[in-house]
Length: 466
Image (tube, rainbow, N blue to C red; front, side):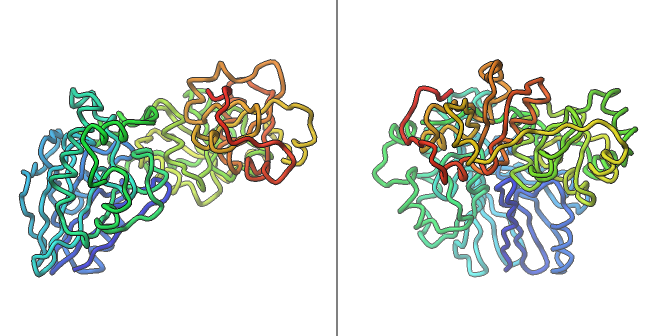
């Protein structure tokens, strides 16, 4: 028996590959399916099932393309109602894969179709659970995402999740391995561990939501406390996972259209396409195509695309370091942004060489900031980061909600914008500049660099949090 976790850091997402005696299953695959097919070919096995733990909101799964390319059967748990051919398993059904078995455990609560898959080894012993968004390491799935689809409140979904955990998960042995759907950094939970594999016994001992003496009402209160609004693209990803999507090969072929500077400029003007620059923030600051926004490929790219570009059908043009264009398009497709119409051939250097206008962002060092008297500061970190520690009197406008809180941005004075290390603040500054703001200056190195200066830092809650 082979069990492999295929973890994708930029989505904080875990897909899984299980193989035994000539057969394999893939659990919650990403949009690009050839890595799973290549692994199966290497092992000389046939992919028999594609198991989906639920209709994912934070990424587009590769289940449909993988099924078409391999002939494998897509499996969902009870209550799922997709529009494509698949097998809807019943609670406690058993799927045979080579010499092992996978038991279907219906665990609603995060969503009503949420299902955990229990892997039994060759001796029939419970080996591991693939818990999707039902159970994470350190947390459980948020119960507010499926309210509309389930026609239930988040409190009712949380109560359902409590029962699922107590009757289906916590009754299993402590040595059962837990393979979760996500780790730290995902928007699907609020307290997830950086670890991506653990045991059920560890979770019973350390996970706040699995306390043995916890009542249902306590669980509901704690699990629903502190939930922030999910990214706007989540419902669209659910829809795509439920109803289907364009073949990835077609998406890549369309997006990998090279354009010289003149064609690129004309495409932007004629189609109202949004220009997304995916280079490193330090390169972007020094020069970029006017009106483009920065979302660097080396950060949590897919999640920030979903958070900052409200329309999943927005036409896109890409500026990337030469050779990275296909990787950029693949990551865009993971969250359903399939409408890229081309990229700047030769990268930003070709734009400069053409003699066309360029734009830049102003930047100061943290040391230079510390020498200013009462500067106006905008902190775009998450509220939790800000409340933990922040520059006194800084205004907190979380990057996630910048589009909705644009009116709060200072308009008549120069302000200095920072995040934790410099990535998110450049995203924010680029969006603001594209919207006509020219009065902001980025702080190089962000809060990490600011803390090394003499600037007064506070760790108490302050009324400038918005």
